[in-house]
Length: 349
Image 1 (tube, rainbow, N blue to C red):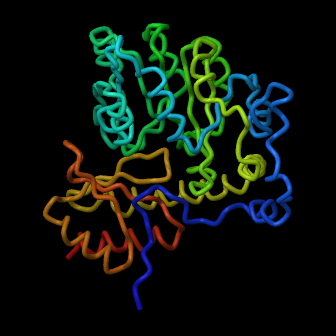
Image 2 (tube, helix red, strand yellow):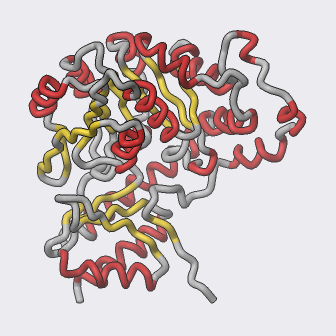
């Protein structure tokens, strides 16, 4: 019998969804699928964007919906980097999701990496180097990830404000906050930032904290200077009527997901305690649903073999300066214990 594989390489969700998800699926009226949404008669995109407007206190017209956060990221890059008259420059973190560069490549864009630096058991954005690079490159777009994948570090609202303050108002700034709810449940900073910096787009998703990557539902908050993107992205005939009901339901179930996030936070501490002291290992502080762990290069093959034998798939990084690191998605508590035990088994041999 083939061994079941537990995927801890994709930052997916190994806990089940909130009970309300099953209730929505059970009680959904399939007749609704025979008709487009009617809320556009009110000048709104979706009952989901309308609900987001209510809970985030942001005008519905400033809310973007997409097929996951990745869809919004692709759309905004395509929207603002396309065109022969542009230099098509996108600034992205040195250590970041490969997808950012990929979508810039699709429109022949230039991806310029700005530095992150390692300090103790975390990574940090280099604000001074960012300022210098932005002045030199004069980019059409700057992308910031907080928390950042794969390094796990995040920015405070004050730090975001500091960065935004030295970026020209004509430059589009995109903040990828896919993992933000793990770092901070306070979202009160979003509205003031949008009002102060109308060139800003903040992208979120239901894939990470709310554990529904298979739903493919993302959303973003848009500053008033980006109305071009609103016209580019809005779907005239509305959105998936089942998805939008599920989206509203999970946002009403934050307490359930916070309990899972609290367990993940406790398991992060286990990683620091159990793996951090091992010789030549290093566990970085994470504000997300994954851990970045540096390991002795000589143990790479043994680690890969051990994980495979135990049915776990872990992401081994191969980027420059991160080639002896692995990014481990936080699974359930028993899964995390088994992964930690597997690492210790290899390390103490």
